[in-house]
Length: 112
Image (cartoon, rainbow, N blue to C red; front, side, top):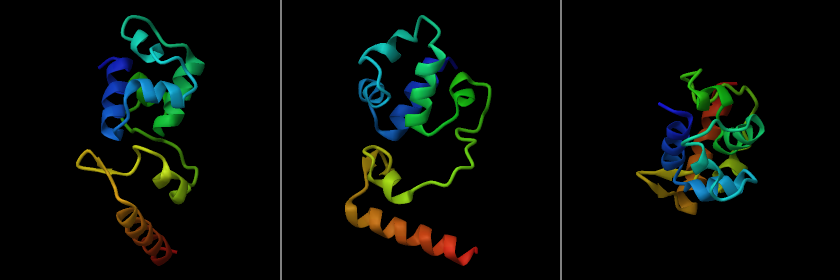
């Protein structure tokens, strides 16, 4: 699988189009499409990886794990970002987001 294919697949899973992904990463609308034929610049690839919440190594196919970050995740922020909280290809309603947050927090607190 190429880097472009990996990004395209991951973006689809997140419910984000490639143009929107490029915009969120601070890139030109068609930049990612250009990666079908050429190797991406490392700083641009890093920006896309950050938006998708994965490592650059994952996008390059060097790592099978989508994310290797051990940094804590701000759940409120993560669930408020468009395209992040999805089920069956559709965004979660605010009601379901609140329920999900409550369950995740309860699970975290029970493990401490």
